[in-house]
Every structure is written in structure tokens, then in C-alpha cells.
Length: 295
Image (cartoon, rainbow, N blue to C red):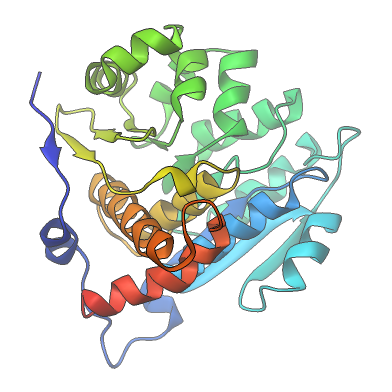
């Protein structure tokens, strides 16, 4: 197994390009966010804003009407596509056709943030894996649904390697290993999973590992305990999906998102403290980080 390489500011600068003076919104891709539910509208908002703040040209939130009403009240720059609601206050599988139709015109799709782990969620995730030809990013309840209603082997059926962003608990449910076993060998777990299922695996913890199916692995220790709150991962998923939507290689996109997310969180902690900072506070610091990189 390859030894993990440490992510750095230099890595990000080598990947991300300055925005061309003659560019337009179409130059930076279209991202669909299939996210949110009646209980977790904020997850959708954090994902969408993470994507917008990371440079995607067009971001569309596809969700139920109550989520759209909540998110559109403070995020003005997204497009909103209302979907059918099921009895669990989540997105109904009746919306699969419109999700696939709208997604066929997008460069990336992120699915899972705040969705609720239901059989409908599983049907939606399965349809995207089997049919979507762009770059797919799966987080949170998209991963929980796979582990609850099927198995991780579904990931290997995708048209191109899926980016998954599990925390340790989600990875335990996906791979069947106990949490303490994963913590003892996070790099090995991420590498084995990426290789077996042909996906880019972002294994989130206080130290995060990003593994590719071909054996490449990076590690990041950026970030701090101020991120130990619900919503932090939704921002990261939106950031990774944003870079994918802009056309960056999916593995590099995931690596850049992890490093920038942690760097912004460290900057935010200096400003607000690890106790007081909230996930949405790091958007301000993310802008400072991009300025520091001269991007």
C-alpha cells in the first residue's frame, strides 16, 4: 500500500486555476444538489452554499418545497427545482425521472445531505448510480441508504468512480468493520474500500484520508474540533462537488476540498474559537483562504 502523502497549500495551488477574465457562468459547470428533508433543511443549504462559495457556475437545489422555501430565503444565487414529498418528509421516489432528466444536463450531482435514510432515498441513489453519466458525489444519508437497503457493491456499478465522503460511523456501516478497527488503520480502510468498489473515498475524521481506486492516497490534518458539529460535512460535500462540476479531476477535487475546508476552519477558530464557531461561519474564512491563494 502507498504511504499517504500530506496535502498542502502547494497542492491546491497546483490544481485550481484562476478564473478567466472572459468567462461566464457556463464556464464553471452546473451542479445539482439532491439534498434536504423536512427535518434537515439546513443540510441542503450548507451544501448549496459550500458549492457556490467554491466557484460552481450554476447550482440547482432539487428538494421538497419546504426545504426550498427555507433555503431560498437566504441563498439567492441558486436555482430551485421542487420535488415530490413522501410520508417521511423526504424526497419521494416518484421524483426519480425528473432528477435524472435535470441531472443529464449537469456536470456533477451531489446527493445525500439531509435526505433521510428511507427506501425512497435508496431508490433515488440507485437510479443515479446506474444512469447518471457525470460525476456523482455521495454523502450522509445516500451512503446510509446504500448500507441499509443494499450493500456497497452498488457503488461499483457507476459509470465513473463515485466520490464518497463518509465519516467513521458511516464507513463502519458501509464496510462492516467496527469503528475502533477503522480508527486503528484509517489509511488502510480507505485504500481497501476505494480499490474494492472503484470509488474515491474521503474518510473523514480528525485526520482525513482521501484514497483513489488506483492506489493513490493523501492525508490531511487541517481542521480542528470546532468542526465537530452537524453541518460541517455538508459544506465539504458541496465544495468537493463544486470542484467536480467545474471540470477538475474528481480525486484532485476531493483533495482540494478537504484541505480548503480544514484551512478555513482553522482560520475561523482563530477568529471565533473552537467553542463558538459554527459550520456556516467558515464561509467567510474560505473567502480569505482563496484570497491568500490569489485565486
